[in-house]
Length: 577
Image (cartoon, rainbow, N blue to C red):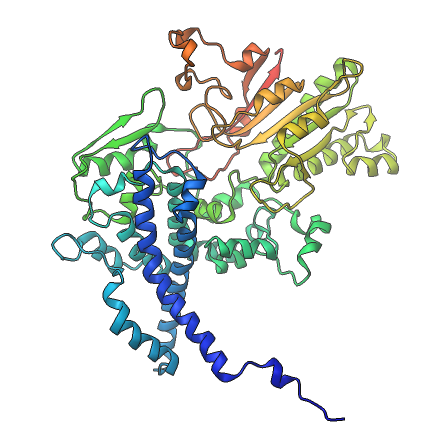
């Protein structure tokens, strides 16, 4: 029979290959021209549609309708591509003078003749056509290629006419400001992070920065540098599914504090919150523009009061972001690393060790009351790393103390997270839960449960006997902003809950209902005449007392720490004492 070479059917014809290359080249050109333009107009529309100007109330449906998330991703990826191309061009020029391909030459000629006149220039011009001083200075500086590209694309989007009025369009848009801060820091410190990780293998291999290939794909889609994430990944040629069956591979170690301080030069960073120092850079820039810093009533938040007609052409993009509330000037590569890896609390060996000691002591106190078992639930646990290392530390400490009294069988059960009684008390059961709504890739065992489901499953009361079946301690790190889960904790009969993150006037939980900050109390229609000084926090009404865990707070590192201020704390709320 006649043999047919199937390769002729598998290989696309040359003209098809050329068409694909042409399509890719044109798509890149269109994206570079349209993405900044669409983002600029989307921000203006989003501001115009907000009923509470200048505040832009979070509404993901309107954002999606106006293509804000899409254009942000496209612009992030485009900035990365442009930077990569420039680096490659430099290397190519250094090695040899090459000629353009026929396809590239054709696209460039068509673009220059028909489309270039209607595409926005990456170099912003002022109202009189002169190149803006701030922009010229920035593009001339020896910035990393990706930061240069980010400035060139984003400045015309943020301040097309270089006035403070245009800053007002987006500075109260929380979602956009969060993205802007993240992208700027990553672009600025990407090369430095790569260098730090190469010099400090303990950081590169720590569990916080280990990611599976599926996480890399998600990261690239969201516009974060693939080269940065690649440098933080574990070499893994296995299938992604194997990740879920090999927890030890991804949850091996946490870095010690001295390594973090040395790598990121954070030894002199303050470990206390200082509102004055936190806003000092914003205050100086505001003064340059003839404005003043004002405090938002009932909060510790400060914002600049600046004449909207003031020009910002002499400010760098970093100064514009700082005066808009992005808080980037006192940051360094550590903050960029947290942004790129989506880390809110950066766990260290010392912090987990101290928290384990605290939980063991509290378990001993609670168990001594009636001999009942202890259950510790980490809700909203994300990747499950904290619960994993707490369990590992607690079991190790307890086993080492009562080693002579433990059989091999009980030791094995303890390592599995089960309760085992001996002369030192019981080893608490530790469980991580998360509903998966933030699409965080688990690095340890995490039960897919919402807060309500977790409290229903592990709540301490047995309804059939109306009695306490075990003691319950809840841990929650960085509770989502403006949400309060603590009422569900208390209603489930917890003995104690421990909150980790910013408190009282920060980004975690509800500042009144969660923390009891009276300045954030919002009166209902029937409570208009309430005396704020007579208010009693919800947790106190339910019989709980607040305890600051200062020894733990001193060991913390968080995403929003800076050289001049640190706001993350560990605070316990205990029933009855």
